Amino acid sequence: MQVLEGHSARTALTRSFNEIPVPDSVLARIKTTFGEALSPQQVVERILADVRERGDDALRDWTEKLDSTRPEVLAVSAQEIADATVDADLHDAIRLAIARVRDFYGQQPAHGFLNHGPDGALGQLIRPLGRVGVYVPGGLAPLISTLIHTAVPAQVAGVPQIVVTTPPGKNGQINPAILVAARELGITEVYRVGGAQAIGALAYGTASIGAVDKIAGPGNLFVVIAKRLVYGQTGIESLPGPTETLVLADDSADARFVAADLLAQAEHLGAEPVLISDSRELLVAVQAELSGQLEALPEPNRTWARDSIAARMKVVLAADLDEGLDLANLYAPEHLCLLTRDPWSLLGRVQRAGGVFIGEYSMEALGDYVAGPSHVMPTGGTARFASPVNVRDFQNIISVVGINEATLRRIGPAGATLARAEGLEAHARAIESRLDES
Ligand SMILES: NC(=O)c1ccc[n+]([C@@H]2O[C@H](COP(=O)([O-])OP(=O)(O)OC[C@H]3O[C@@H](n4cnc5c(N)ncnc54)[C@H](O)[C@@H]3O)[C@@H](O)[C@H]2O)c1
Ligand SMILES: N[C@H](CO)Cc1c[nH]c[nH+]1
Ligand SMILES: [Zn+2]
Image (tube, rainbow, N blue to C red; front, top):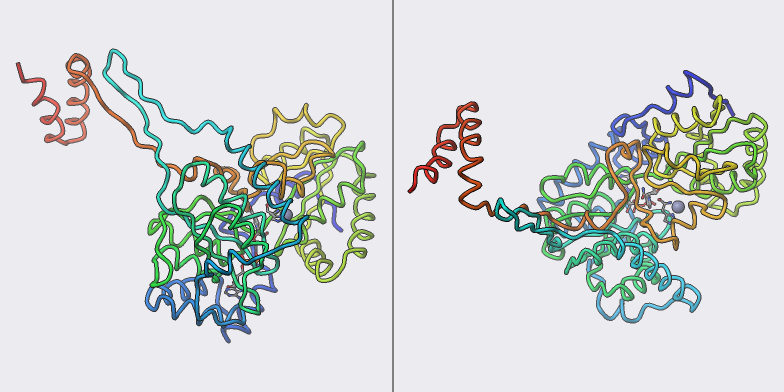
C-alpha cells in the first residue's frame, strides 16, 4: 500500500462532501438496475419524484426493484412488534445500550432561558419537534444500534411521535431485533421501506406514512443524497453517510489493536479507513496485521472489508504527532481514534471530528454500541460544520422578546435609524409609532 507524506498526504486528505467519488460497485449496480449509466443523484431524483406522485404504490414498486421484496402492507403491525423475540443476551444488550445512550443524553444541557431584567424579558423557549422520522440502515446489516442511537436523543428531547423506516429483508420482514429495540423504546410506528424511497415518504407523506417534521439517521449514498434533496420540505439533522475512521497512532501503539479498529469500520459498505503515524515501523506492522486479520474474517465480512481497504484506505507517515493532528483536523473524520503514548495530551488540539476515541480501551466499535454518545456522526468532511446526532437536533428554539417601555425609548431610535439606512420606512415608523405616544 502506498504511504503518503507531506504535500501528497495533505492533498489526499483534503475533501468535500460533494466531490466524494462514487464507488465503481455502486455505479455498476445502477447500470444493471436501471439499464443506463445514471449518477446516484439522478437515480434519487427519479425515485423521489415518483414517490411524490404515486405515494405507496411507488414505495412498493421501488422496494421490489431494489430490495427484491414487495411490501403490500408497509406498516409493521402492533402484533408483529409485540411478538418479536431475540435471545436473552441480545435482549439484555439492547436494554443496556438504550440505558447508556439515555443516560448520556440526559446530561446534555438543552434547556432554554427567560431573563427578566431591566430591559424587560429576553430569552429562548425550547420546544420538542412534533414528529420525527428515524432512518435505520438495513441494506447490508440491520443496524439495531442505529435505531437506539438516533431515537433516544429524540426521546430525551421530548419528541412525542417517532416513526421508523428501514429496508425489509428479502423475506419481506424486518429483523426481529429491530422490532424488539423499537418495542423497548416504546416506538409503535415502523415501516418496511428503505433507501431514497423511504426518505421521500417521510418528507412528502403517503397514504400509509404521514410526513415528518425532520428526518434523522444515517444511510448509504442514496439515502444521504435523498435527505439533502428533501431538505426544506422537511428538516434533516445532517448528512451522516458511509462511515470512516482515522487512527492516529505512534510507536507505542499495539499494531493488533490499530488493525482491528481499522478493520471494524472497513466492514461497513463504502467505508474509508485512514491510518496516520509518525512511526514507519508501526505503519509496516499494521499493514501486516491487517492482511492477517482480514484473512481471518468470515465471509461476507471479509469481502466488504477488503473492498473498503483496497478502494479507499489511506496510509500516512507524519513528521510527528503535531503534523498528524493537523492532517486529522484537515480531514475532519467521523471517528478520530488516538492510540498514542499520551492520548489525553492531544485532546486540546482536536478541532474537527465527529467523535474522538481515546486510548486502547475506547475502541470505536464500543462507541457504535454501548459507550453512550450516539454513533450517528458526520462523515465526508462534514464534521467541519456538523455534529453527532444529539438532543438539540430534535428541538426548536423560539426567541422571546418582551422589551419594556423604558428600554424601547433607549434603543428604539437606533432601530429606526438602521431601518432607514436599509430603506425600510415602514419598519422605522412602526418603531417610532410607540415612541411618539405620551
Ligand atoms: N455516519 C454514521 O453515523 C453511520 C451510522 C451507521 C451506518 N452508516 C452507514 O450507513 C450505510 C448503510 O448502507 P446500507 O446500504 O447497508 O443500508 P441503507 O439502508 O442505507 O441502504 C439500503 C437501501 O439503498 C437502496 N439502494 C441500494 N442500491 C441502490 C441503487 N443502485 N439504486 C437506488 N437505491 C439503491 C435500497 O433501497 C436499499 O434498501 C453504510 O455506508 C454505513 O457506513 C453510517
Ligand atoms: N460505525 C457506524 C457509523 O458510525 C455505526 C455502526 C452501527 N453498527 C455498527 N456500527
Ligand atoms: Zn461501525
